Length: 294
Image (cartoon, rainbow, N blue to C red; front, side, top):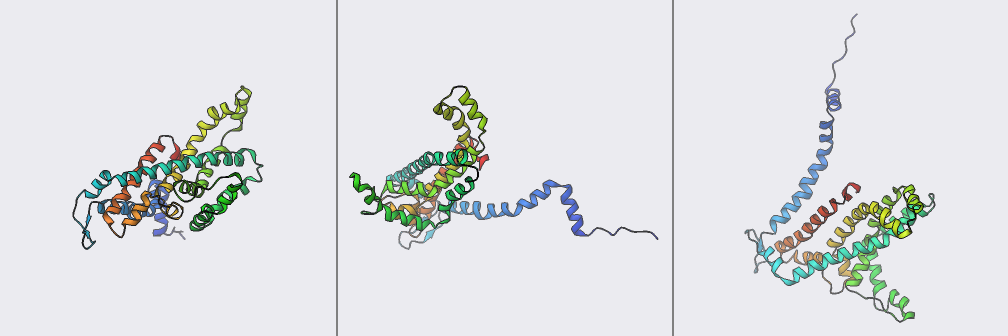
C-alpha cells in the first residue's frame, strides 16, 4: 500500500512563501502602519499645506478655494507674526536648555551613583509626573505662581516675589512638564557609559571638570540631542500652558488656535511654521546621530 503525502493547503503554501522571502514578509508586516502614516499623518499635513493657499471671505467668513499666497505673505510682512514665531522658538530653546541642565544631575545620580536596587524605583519616580493629567499639573502651577500664592509665600521671608504670570512662568511650567522626556534619554546614555573610561580618566590625572568635558559630554551629546527633540517640539507646539500661566504672552500655538474658527487658511499657514521649524531642527539633530538613539 503506497503512502501519499497530502497536498499543502493555501495557508501552508503562504507560510512557506513568506519563510523563503523575508523581504516580502517584512513588507507585509509594515504595510499597515506605513499606510496609516501616509494617509493619516502625511495626508493631513498635505491637506494643511494645501488649505494654507486658500483664502477666507471677509463678509461670510467662508473658505474660498482660490489659490494665492496672501497668507504666507502676511506671515513674512506682519510684525506680530514674526515676533510670535521668534518668541516661540526662543521659549522652546530655553526650555530645552533648562531641561538639559536640570536633567543631568538627576540622570547621573540615577545611573551612576544610586544603588542598583533603587534605580528602578527612581526611574518610576521620574515617570510618575507623566501619569498625572496635563491640565491638573498646569493649573497646580497657576495656583503656585498666583499673586499671594505658594511661591510668593515661600519667597516672602527673603523679601522676594514670584514671577507671576507671563513669559517666565511659561518657561518654568513647560520645563516642569517636559523634564522627564530629557531625563530618560540621558539616563539611558549614562547607564551605557563604561565605568572603565571614568576610571582611566581619573588614573591619567584628569579632574572632574576635564573628565566631564572630554569623556562624559561627547558620549552624552546624542542622548541630550534625542531628548531635545521631545522638549523642543512639545514646547514649540504647546498652547495650553501659555493660556493658563502666560498672562498676555502669545505663542504660535495660540495664534493657530484663535484663527481656526475665524480664518482657517491663515491658521493653516501659521501651522506650517512649527512644522518647518521642527523639520529643520530634526535635520540638525540628525547630524549628531541622536535619531538612532530614539
